[in-house]
Length: 120
Image (cartoon, rainbow, N blue to C red; front, side, top):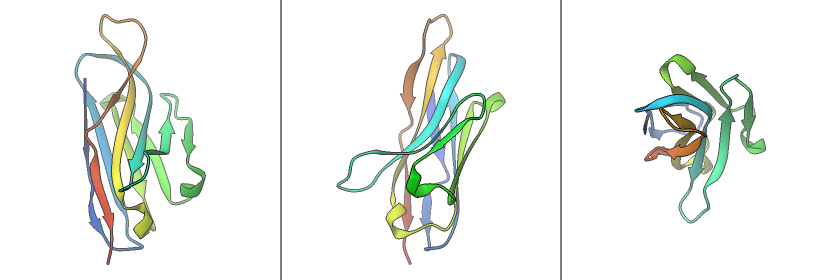
């Protein structure tokens, strides 16, 4: 199973970015998907999660600026980030709880991370 992120980059304060993460491989089903981020010198922190049914959960500090969504048919999760601030600068990682073909139960898989830099 592979998770491949895209959409990161350099953006000015107040700008927007949309991250995407596509899961591929021997996938039977995916339960929760989500995004975490890690800034230099800090621990990885939750950004947002979304269940297969569309229930979302956000870090309190990001509510109203970030929106998570997913396309179950494409095994893809998205993160729309608006009104970006310099403190949003971090490596953003996607994850998915995946049940592999022929396996029982779900296991977490992570993407390689995509850099988001907010700077003027």
